[in-house]
Length: 100
Image (cartoon, rainbow, N blue to C red):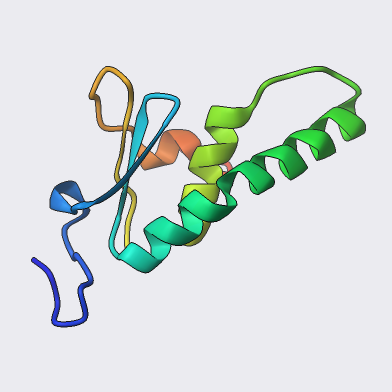
């Protein structure tokens, strides 16, 4: 259901989508989608460089970082699908440790 201001309250049916490395990111607004699209590469380069410099290892954390960045931008929920069209679990990509 979309509000009068164009905010999609149900991310699963949102028309605001971005695809990165086969993962589909659903947004509640065109504003959040555009922000993600325009700044994702810069964010990935910066954070990857930080990890390499800090830990002195050559890794490729781009998918994890893209999902982490999505969680920073999208304030109204979490809805990401994998390349296999499987809904990703928000807890799997949580930055905070989970208590079971």
